[in-house]
Image (cartoon, helix red, strand yellow):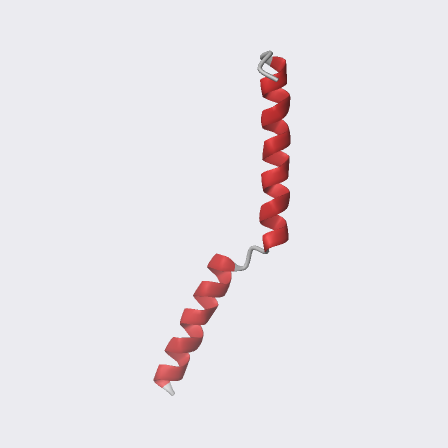
Length: 46
């Protein structure tokens, strides 16, 4: 029983750490890329 609780606790930690979906990561990436593009355009690089 103790081992089962330890395993469950480990999986819960992993869930809290890695629950970000690929879609969320891609949206943040796209937002950052757009902001970078605007900044580079403002500096005359694009």
